[in-house]
Image 1 (cartoon, rainbow, N blue to C red):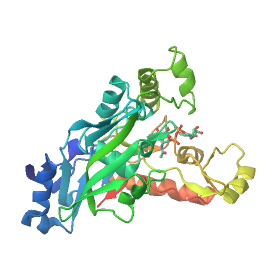
Image 2: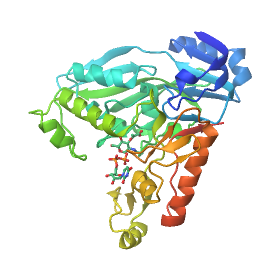
Image 3: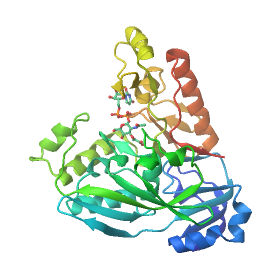
Length: 338
Ligand code: EPU
């Protein structure tokens, strides 16, 4: 276990905020985590701690006066192998895109559309990451976690209560469990999901679809729209796409006929927040050192030296403008850490 005080989090948040944690602890095994949770050190910090992954969905308002925990559990093992599928049990600290690369490299299907998403395996199961028509809950079999007293618990996929960018770990059980491993079900014969945008055209331009062709196409689409956090600090989509009642959408549609939407069920539709942000005029605009990305309005960026508070102010201004014009509340997907 590694433990540091007054520790710089610059390498641990993709917004590139130069903030410090009062205490930073990284553990290498479930055993180390359990021992730490029973220690006096943890007891002293129980009231103020966060668990981070790669910090790709976080925005620190400033220095963090509590404990930051991080998993370095990075094992990967085959938990079940049949003619149709493999179950892979993967440590929470495994880098998500390395896991996707492993699956594609072993001809295991299910996560190829989720290529090039920053972050780690543990957070994938909290956030229910999604892209290009696939959500990670589609392939999650179960989630292994530890409560704050060090007791293990296994959650079935159903118990995780997955929804769009949502899970029980973000709601009722927020801050109560630490995910140590995720078990994914990968298929040996692929069912390609190419319906999103121009994915099919890009993949088929290479010939018969393959897992690696999908991975390559998704990576290329992301590279063309999304800024590289190493060059321009950001946390991907800043807001979730708002879900509104179908009746409200029908009224808006008469006023704004080109407003896109995706049906959720008979009563609700999802409206792209990027479209709303662009249409209230914020795309490419800056407020101080924080700005809205010029190729994908859903992404807020740190132009260099921005504080978390500056980014939060920009987000607030955007959401007020959207509410004033469309009567829709956009909610940050990024977690604000105070
Ligand atoms: N749009 C605009 N202007 C913009 C951006 C988007 O008008 O600047 C409109 C367009 O009509 C476009 C529609 O929004 O057709 C959807 O845009 P896009 O396909 O880029 O997807 P998104 O809804 O903006 C979501 C995810 C992304 C994911 C893509 C692809 C959320 C919050 N975001 O974005 O996830 O990569 O779909 O599946 O659901 C992330 O979570 O960090 C992320 C990048």
